[in-house]
Length: 443
Image (cartoon, rainbow, N blue to C red; front, side, top):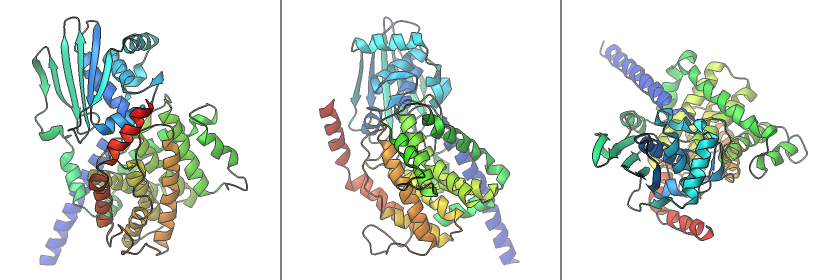
């Protein structure tokens, strides 16, 4: 009876975790239009801009280093300009924060003219607030009669403060402005990769089928460059060589083509939305497209496909929770490609141990790739990360893990992830400053 009662308690806990993880997925896997860092700045400005109808005289923006770096060269949908000053001006004139990460779809020719006029007068400034280590955007709008300040912190849509003419309109009563799903993320951080897989395996196809919306959305984005000229021609190159003696029309080539095409289009300012993961659109591409393409190539059931997507999204969020949303390292490769590798290993029939091998192999392969901002060149990085994801999944399920004694590799996947985070958070603390210094010299 004791054993039966104990097992019943385990089942109830598993059910609770399943419901929590499905809730986290629904909060985390959401559409985004444009590179998430400029969109975040635009959203912050939109919250402030909505509070006035007076003519805007100036906009002052403060951001943490990661937002600054990632928004410096990123394209803006519906706009021929790149960079955070233009994003801030657009948001201030759009005044539509209720649209969240899709607010830029409301851009009109009139708003573009207002943006160009304000930025042309050098009335929009953006500077780094050095002491802010996490995601942070502060926007101060000055008009003929008003002074409005808005602050986003912690996550890209998490408004924590709004003030007009010295009066606080809104203030979020949460330490560090962390999002409401913080407790869910903490629950996830206490789990192992094997437990994440177990939770996904208890979910039905119907419960997870909403994840297919991301597949459809990101497939459309991947196809955008077939008949549109985007970026510098990375996707065009791969597409022209697919099926040749150089690049066969195999799973690896198709994954690299789809991921690079979608990323190049998105970061060049493509007007199509992206299904994001862990707060970033490019991460969503890197998680979803390799797993979906592998599932189709292997001919697995829809149930197994959506479970693999769930595992990949949750592992992506798990890794990002340790390394941070905006790391000196390329988290689209470090976290998202590693998560995709776990998802592919699952599709290949990998055991819990072999899913852990995929993480170990990725930790010994891609750790250290720097993040030097969001731009079309990220298409090359994510193609590289996605090819590593497939290689590491294949070697994992063939019981060919890197040795525990190799470099930063560890016995468990959880320790591998913690080592990756340690490299990014402590070991590369100076790296962001040097990257931004180089980027600023070019500007």
